Image (cartoon, rainbow, N blue to C red; front, side):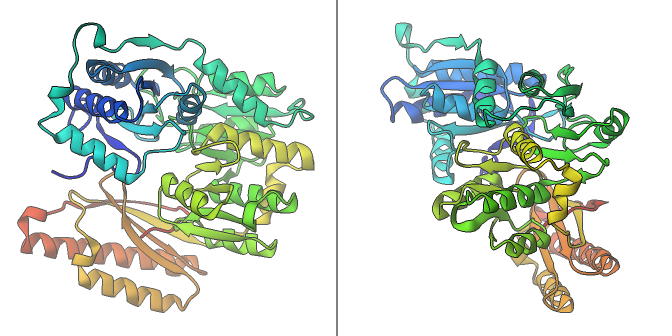
Amino acid sequence: MARLFGTDGIRGEANSYPMSPDLVLRLGQAIGVYFRTKMAHPRILIGKDTRRSGYMLEQALCSGICSVGVDAFFLGPLPTPGIAYLTRGLRACAGIVISASHNPFHDNGIKIFSGNGYKLPDEDEDKLEALLKSDDLENHAVHGADIGTARRIEDAIGQYAVFLKEQFPKHLTLDGLRVVIDCANGAAYRVAPKIFSELGAEIFMLGVEPNGVNINDHCGALHPQQLREKVMLYKADIGIALDGDADRLVVVDDKGDIVDGDELLAICGIHMLQKNKLRNRALVSTIMSNMGLEVAMARHGGKVVRTKVGDRYVMEAMINGDYNLGGEQSGHLIFRDCATTGDGLMAALNLLEIMVESGKKVSELRNCMERFPQTLRNIKVKDKIPLDQMPELTDFINRCETRLAGKGRVLVRYSGTENLARIMVEGEEEDVIDNMVDEIADQLQKSITQHTQAKPSAGAGVGNSKGKSGGRTE
């Protein structure tokens, strides 16, 4: 059986394996048993986004947790970083997030934070998975008064809102700023308006009417087109777009242009360098990040440390290297001095702080970084055939890199959360890299076809969708 945990927990179509109620109930049991060995009276928090399937899955999780003698606490819809924060603040042994982040509503997922607010490392996930698949799990069931209890924490949103507002400098306000906020009909639909209005901004809200099926639907960080229109209509200073679980941020500036995670990292990193607040004069990003970020940081005496894709790996690098700023091009920004995971609302507040202090608009601040042309293509695959098992593809990629002559990058990798192969080429000339991506996509299709014919059991179906992005993959 394939490993259940991917780069960001378990994810799949709701009510189908692995996001089926029976498996999620067993996962709840495994989580309860695992943390019961670490704490005498463990408490586990359960939060979610606004997907219809969240009700079903939280009940299944709770049933499993309580059946092995552990108490569960419901937080309701709350951003992923809010669940991580409350896990620490309420001294719980674990916090569980039911969310598929930016995926469509019919998907759902589960990710787990330990008591310190950090995502579980791979080795702990492996232990949980072993427990879940073991025949011994049922032997841990308890009876009578030993069965765990389930309660609801009513003021979870208020606690998280107070925490975020405390991160904004006391001598500053958002008075006079016009802010459009798109909550993607997701987990931040209640907390985001509260925070920005209470700090003094004039706010205009989008994506705050969740109905269980409209999360991320042509709104939020993945679809900021409507936000752009509203920023221009209201002559706003900034547009803030969150995704379904509000752990990522995409910004629309005062001119209607989209600002992604790389540019936000550059703005925040350079600001922290100038304030002597950037630890070790470096930030952490992934291999997806644009080369322009490195150039911008180097111009101000800083550097970029790269890691593989996934905010959990960014955080690991930040801890190991003692860095306090990191993130991804997709908009996950981590401010480790006060957070343990990516937080779209905290990132927005940090950007607004820079705007207020400097008196500059985002359209001015983003000039600190010049992007290199990049093209990304996603190739749908049925099975993720290891790339090193297709030597003709590897050879072709190496030849493409030679053609770039050290002035660009080629990366191909599989998505950790979807059945996609991602091809990225970065270079100086857009036409050249566009053609190169097409060539690599064609070669990938040929290689998969050859592999399928040779090994039918490992076949893959291929389609593709093309788009522009900044990023590097492996």
